[in-house]
Amino acid sequence: MDRIKSGTRKINQMPRKALIAANWKMFKTPAEAKAFTDAFLPLVAGHDRDEIALFPSVTSLATVVEAAAGSNVAVGLQNMHFAEEGAYTGETSAAMLKAVGATHVLIGHSERRQYFNETDEVVNKKLHTALKHGIVPVVCVGEHLHERETGQTGLVLLKQLQGALHNIDSAHAHSLVIAYEPVWAIGTGRTATPEMAIEAHMIIRAELANIFDSHFAKATRILYGGSVKPENASELLGQDEIDGALVGGASLKPESFAAIVKY
Ligand code: PGA
Image (cartoon, rainbow, N blue to C red; front, side, top):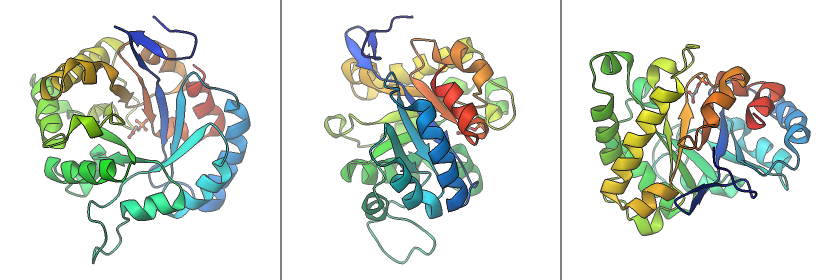
């Protein structure tokens, strides 16, 4: 592993600072989210090797932004609508997210794709909106088990990436983060081996080079997600090709998520 002192990874002269992100899904009231943040911040105080971000639910967003103000921990939302505003009952806009002080957004998480019919086209619209508003987008891609078992992983990743990145201008997409999350590894306790994750990340990076250029591909962070926990964090995050993690279940307890951050 090739790390340089500032905590960034140096690959062909392109530094990539890892991002370790907590996806709390539909867990935690504002009081619980505040209790987590208050307990978590001291555990990671001064940690600057990696970027750290928390993704609470919408009702806890302002509370967590306030609790994390001035710290080394950023805050984002798990989803947002692509429209600027309008008659979209139950949705949250980019402007609303930013007004509260959030800086990041998850786009196209597999649970959004699976339960809320989020298509590659919708993912693409959301990505355009996030970039327009200067919000750091974490675009999630990944194959289902039957797709892996029938040898379609590469094809699925290419389709999702091409859909998500349609008409995106690389000059305005430097903040783009991709999260590779094999659906069969999410919340199942089944983790991709480092070799499986590296292989998928290399497919993604090659396609980024194809869609944009190799300079852009080398600079883009690709996270791994799917049953990351303190016990497997170092074997996954220790790989040069893996630029951080998107963590669900194991991010719900401060000690557990801090152990992952500090793998
Ligand atoms: P998990 O979830 O860590 O619980 O598998 C990851 C995710 O859905 O982002």
